[in-house]
Amino acid sequence: MRLPSSLRQMYPSSARLYDLPHSACFAPAWISGALAYPAQAVPVASCAAYRRSAYEAVGGFAASLPTNEDMLIASVFLKEGWRLAYCADAAVLHSHNFTFRQEYLRNRQVGRFLARYASCLGGGELGEGMRMVRTVSLQLLRGGHVWECAAFTLNCAARLLGSRAGRHDEARQQRRQSRTREV
Image (cartoon, rainbow, N blue to C red):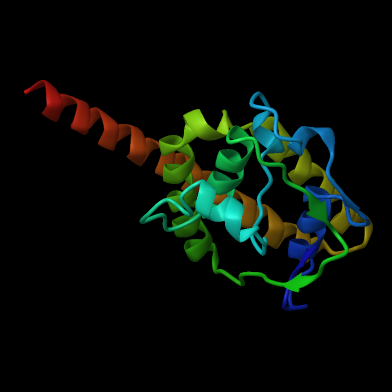
């Protein structure tokens, strides 16, 4: 399980617990290696470990990716017939204490990445993100953490706006490149 390295904020750990099961090790059917899989099934595997032979067989990470190389290589592993597994019992301290501006800028890069590699990763599902926001917000509010909930809401807004801006940036760049090829 990826644990937040700072206890300053509660919402990173609440969101992490929503993302993935928090006990046991398993290789569920949705990461069995099938070519057709829902977009939300591509594991976000930061803090992942890869078998060297698998990593080398798929050519390693794509060059010049500023973010999300873990998602891309997970989708490549699946398409090449490798299997993935998740182990919640493995703990790694990892988190980012970004400002809202930094979160926006980071997710702008993420949005560009998701738009560029949409054919490899499948479409994103806004509904799942909104379910996570509702679940975590309710958890924080029920615990009496009103200010944490407000910070979490602003963080999510920065992420969403950044991602949308990045997707727009990528679409604009692809249109420019398309026009350049036509000339």
